[in-house]
Length: 110
Image 1 (tube, helix red, strand yellow):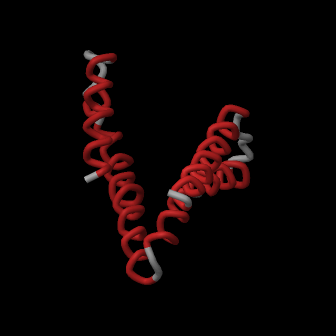
Image 2 (cartoon, one colour):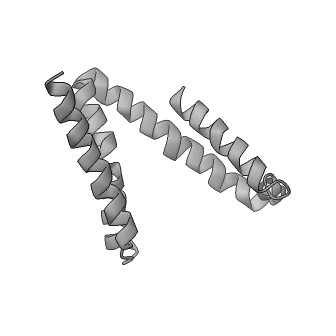
C-alpha cells in the first residue's frame, strides 16, 4: 500500500511538472525490459524479503535492515562503479539516521 501511494504521488507530481514528457519513456520498446526487471527484481524483491524477514525474525530487525539500505547502495556504488557519493548524499543519510535515533529515543520515554 505504501509503495502504491508513493508511486501515485510521484506520477501526479511528475504530470504537473513534465506534462508532455510523462509517458514518453514508454514509446521506446528498449525501455520495457529494464522497467520490468526493476519491478520484479527491485520493488517486488524488497517487499518480499521484508515480509520474509518479519516472518523469521521480527518487525524491528526488518525495519532496521530496510532503513540502512541506502548505506548498502553507497557501498555498492563505491566498490563496483568506483563512484564516490556527494557530500549531500552523506549528509542526507546521516540526517535520516539522526532523526531515527532521535525519534526512537523520544518514543522510549513517552
